[in-house]
Length: 173
Image 1 (tube, rainbow, N blue to C red):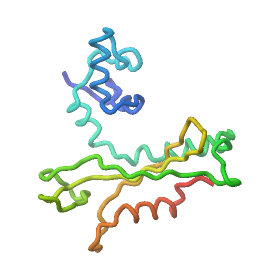
Image 2 (cartoon, rainbow, N blue to C red):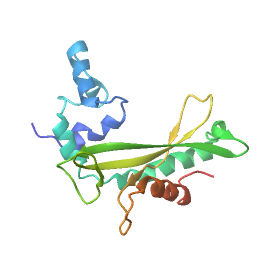
Image 3 (cartoon, rainbow, N blue to C red):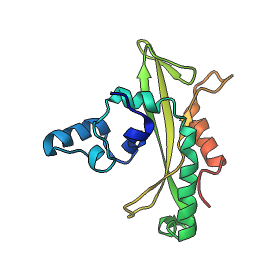
């Protein structure tokens, strides 16, 4: 079967919090006869991981970046950020880095590298989130993809990404 972005709601996978959205949906379908793919997103069949990758890989993450700013702006307008204020009008930002691709064979021009037994090529990102102690919700901010910097001998991409994120105004107020 061939899927398109529209008829399979490819981005619906971001709605569910699971390490493997499709595997979780398959387990639901086997155990309960229906999956969230069917009941929430109207899919007849659950696509394979490769189908989803083939549809999402060409989509630029830049398309999603405005959504993060819109959410923060709406929270500011509605007063929803007040619950996050600490130390006056400041908000706390938690930073976390993660890798989402590692290979000693597959690489692209955006890969960072490290030498282990073999040379590993990897993709990573820095994620910023508005947090508050004793608050049961968080507000994700636009992620910063970590890429090697041209002309730099040392791969200190994480610190450069964090510096960019803060100076570019990724934090509200």
